[in-house]
Image (cartoon, rainbow, N blue to C red; front, top):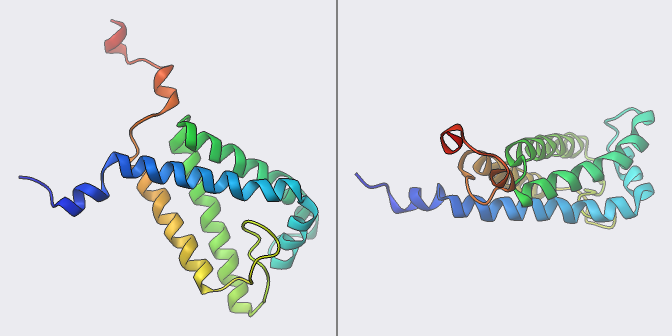
Length: 159
């Protein structure tokens, strides 16, 4: 019995690879501005009013580097499942932060790619949820071009 062509397409490993490269590049791109302009990013984090004041600068310094490392790991396929889980977790946290501030009616910038963006909106939530869905797809269907496969062997191959 053959699968529906649409199901085959949506579960294909090449689609998962394309999504893995896209999400990895997206997080690398998002981290660049934040790394370069840490003070502005700290102001954006503070404007969300969700973390203690003492944690704002810590997050502003470390979160962009964390995004960069996860994005690179995802692209090269080294510990890709771990990287996609971490990225998915970040996206869920970002989405919750946006929803909370939308419900507060706070006209704050997203802070996703730069500090001069449009204010957050429900479209920001939709976009983030699409990215979360992409990370779930990557987690379940990504199977090809993993760097770690080049350095590991199965017991059957050795014996």
